[in-house]
Amino acid sequence: MKKLAVFVSGGGTNLQAIIDAVAAQTLTNVEIAAVFSSSRKAYALERAAKARIPSFCYVPKEYENNDLFTEAILEKLKELNIDLIALAGYMVVLSPKIVREFQNRVINIHPSLIPAFCGKGNYGIHVHENALARGVKLAGATTHLIDDGTDTGPIVMQKAIPVLDDDTPETLQKRVMAECEHIILPQTIQLMADERLSVEGHRVRIIDNTR
Ligand code: GAR
Image (cartoon, rainbow, N blue to C red; front, side, top):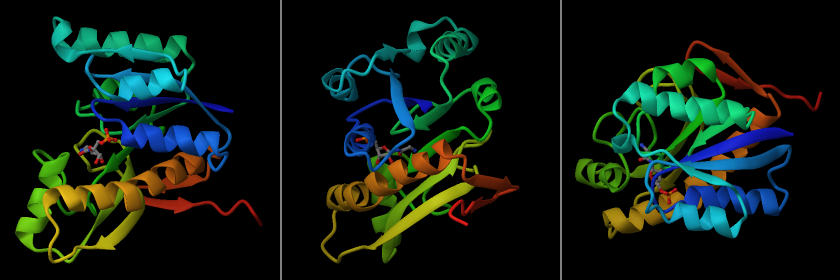
């Protein structure tokens, strides 16, 4: 059983999708051991409490510098013996030190088909504003492993849906969350928990363990 920490900053619908998948046993071999929030006001904290998952707040501006912030998080991750990290709407760039310690064990969900609409400034609703402004016909979500860049790590899964003529950023965001993010994030965590990812450069292959 792998111990998972879920990092959040806001509403926590992706956290909820993971909680629901574990409860429904469609996601197995994983225990959600902790929720780490970058905000004390995140609704995700209520979701964690309701599911009786311990939560911890590490708010960047409450620390003198980024090194102290990083050390505090690392210490707690080690104390809890965390194996895997899922960034689920986490709006803070994870320090390279944590990325190094958890190499190929940190997954992020991004609300676009990377390499479109990713990187600096492309987060949350802005991704969908930019996608509609550019007039794309397909939207979607991507799970990727974390490296030292922003949204540049090896892609694990992607799921696409059509953009509708009357979509607004809000309607598109809602469908991408429900029809893409909340499906591929638990599926990706399952692959990580079962150690089925083989990473070569930027290419990730899923190991078939049924043979
Ligand atoms: C989700 O759409 C997630 O993909 C996005 O923020 C939202 C958080 O929603 N993440 C990013 O934009 C990261 N670059 P949630 O708190 O309801 O899961």
